[in-house]
Image 1 (tube, rainbow, N blue to C red):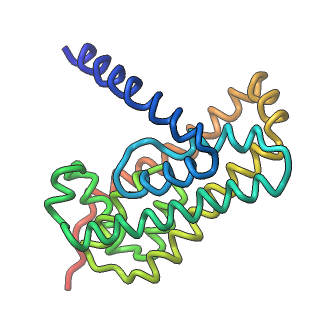
Image 2: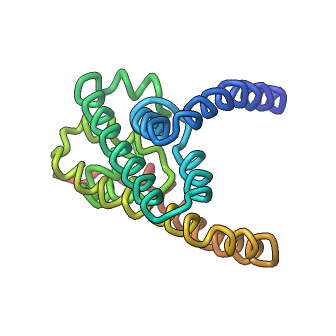
Length: 209
């Protein structure tokens, strides 16, 4: 039962994602900007699915710079919409689109770590839009939210564009050999403590006033 439901969910995701992603890809940098902007507050397709192939096919540094600027600024602008949505609709929005455990983790991230928590979310693959909703609902300072998101998004997308754009062929050859096992092991070693920390955010007691 569970496996059939999972297969149905994956089939729906593929049917919906493939033509949508193709439409964004066909529109170049404009499509990348629209995909990234909307992903930051409502839709689920990550911009990395366009950033990586666009960076790999870029022919010059100017093109790589444009890709970096478009994806970074679009993501930060979209997160402002998420912030506004959280301020405007708050708990009903979160109850409708996010799991309670995820909301509790983001609440802890914002209340305990403030701008640094936003930076962590902006740098990592955890759902940035939900953080924006929580930050808006909690009344986080908008300038701090923007600054932390801009730094985090710049580092995340900058690393992707730089590595793939400048060293794409070398990385591909490295991953096709024993490098894949090395990268997988390193990722697992780094991901485990990060996941434990993220999972533990749901269990942290509230600070006493």
